[in-house]
Every structure is written in C-alpha cells, then in structure tokens.
Image 1: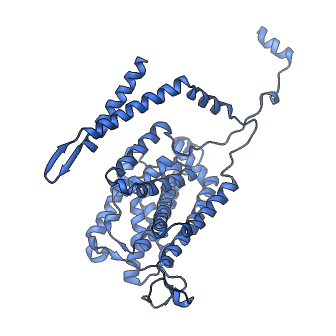
Image 2 (image 1 turned 30 degrees about the vertical axis):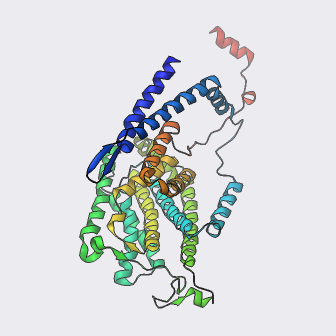
Image 3 (image 1 turned 90 degrees about the horizontal axis):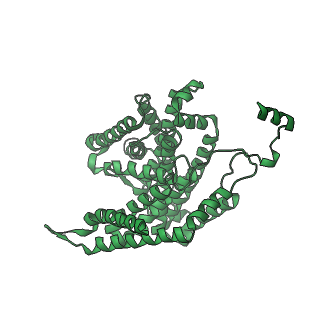
Length: 428
C-alpha cells in the first residue's frame, strides 16, 4: 500500500509540474496572474485516478486476465496474416459514401481535410514507416503539389486535372533530388537534413515574391467537371452545373464533388500502398529499415530502394497538396511550416509505423478530435498532447501494431524421435 501511495504521489507531482505553467499562468493584458486551483485539481484527479487504477489492476486481477487473454489467443496452424475482413471494409465504404448526406456542410469540409491528411500520412508512412528514413521536411512535397496547381494556373492556365498528375510528378522529382545527398545519412543526421530541406522550400516560396507572390500567396480556382463549373455564374468559360442539370444552385455541390473525388483518389492510393508492401519493392523497404548492411549483403541496391521510397512518398504528398490548394482556393507559405511536418509524423507514429489501417485511424482521429474540442480552444492542443503521451505509454508501437507473418505447427503434429535414438542420446 505504501509503495502504491508513493508512486501515485510521484505521478501527481509530475502532473502538477506539467499542468502548472499551462493552466495556472493566465496573461491578462500586460499582467501575469497565477491561479493554482486548476493545476491542483488536475493533479488531484491524476493522483486519484492512478491510485484507483493500480488498486483495481492488482486486486481484481485485470492485468493477469489481460496477459492470459493475450497468451491464450494463439493460432494452431496458419501461414501469414489476414487483412481487414470484407465486412469491415464494406461497412467503412458505406459509411464514407453516406457521410456527406447525413452530416452538414461543415462536417463535410472537416472530412475533406481529414482525407487530405490521410493522403499525407500514407505518403510519409512509405518513407518513415516502411523504409525507416526519418523525414522531418515532408511538408515541402506538400507545398510543391499545392504551388504546382497555383502557379500552373496563374502562368499557364493549367487546369486541376492536368495539375494533379503534374504535381505528383514534380513532388516525386523533388523527393528523389532530396534522396541523392542523404543516401549515406541515418537517424538524427537524416532528420536534420530533411528538416533543412523543408525550411528551404518554405523560405523560397516566401521570399521569391515576383514568382510565388510571397506572403500574399496565389489564388486558385475550384476544379471543374468536364467544363461544368460549381459557381453560381461561370467564371472559367464553362457552364454552371446547376444550369446544365436544371436544378437549384447550392454551395453544397462544391463540397460533395471534392469529397467524392478525394475519396476515390484516397481509395486508389490505399490499394497502391497495400500492393507495394506485398511486392518486392515493399519487402526491400522493410529490409532496409531493419538492417541496411544485411540488405546490401543480399544484393539489394540500397540507392534505388531509398530513392524509390522518397519518390513514391513525395508523390502521394504532392497529390495531397493539389487537393489542399483546390479546397482552400488560396495558398501561401504559412500553410507549410514545420508544424505540419510534425503533425503528419505524429499521424504515422500514433497509427503505427508501417501500418496502413493504423495511419488511416490516426489521421481521422487527429483531424476530427481538434474540431470536436473547438469549444475548449484554450486546452485543445493540450488535450492532443496528453493523448499522444498516453498513446506512447500504453501502446508505444501505435494504434495498429504490425505483426509479421508466422507459421505455427501444433505440438501433436510435431514429428517424434524414436525411443531408441532418444535413449542413445541420453546415454551419451
């Protein structure tokens, strides 16, 4: 009991030190006032919660039951691992299709933003989760895709449908350009170089005012569908879609079109990533992540593997940038800061490095959760930080932990040695 109380007190003291500067210091004008009530209440809640949880886990045997259930669920004989069941996949598809008709326009815009972050998470998951290359400048490829559409339309009247593949190709090219100088770097050194690359792209976009518009940004038109525009009046030489179909104009048409288009692109890219993971290139990424020396000793060309990871991951990020520009209708460098790279990396880490379903869940969670906590704007970032800390404590490998394929033979099916041979070995 005394040890449990001492541990609970230590946890409460740590919680007080964390909460005191965040919730106890209040800036009112030029005066800084100290309020100890809120951090003390939070520390007391942590104290009671930790003590209660430890008592329940010890006296009710929750921890033993959890360990027994984990050890009891063992396959008898299986090869490989099955993916998500078709029932769950069908339910997810049906939910995604019905979502915009059940919720309002604001919820659809949040869902579009979640799908964009899902694209970015899938792209970074190739580089960090599968290939094991820590990239802190992934937002640079996001910016390349967005500015490809913006500058392409501004200077060359490039349409959205041409900017989409062009933005993906340019982002992949930038990814391979980044990959060349970092072929020999690992760990922290690689992270520093990629962080510098992301900042270089942002500073170029911010300071090259004559081309990029600098901090003023560039406006972007909304995509059209076969010449049909989603505006009340035609602005790009086409025909408004509500006039073509003889229906009443509604601003919801824009959101629905972009949502379903983005949903199709996300589904195709998810299938692409799953297929790549099962192909030899995906196996080579995982081999490179586990041990580069062993990977090279097996005859795998590490230069090609690294460049392919950087290029394909950047390509997916470029696609997300084009959709972001189309959604916002305006791009400027303030949308591509280091915070975005850290946010995308948090999606990959919390979802589970290398896990596609985990990245999907983490992207939806980290995009929808801040919107649900908008009424608590003062503590919204704090709540996300607490959720990340709890995730790293309870599930350090992410929401969806990757499991390797295995083959288990039941004990009764194992070949038994002859009695005479076993006795002879015993005598020796």
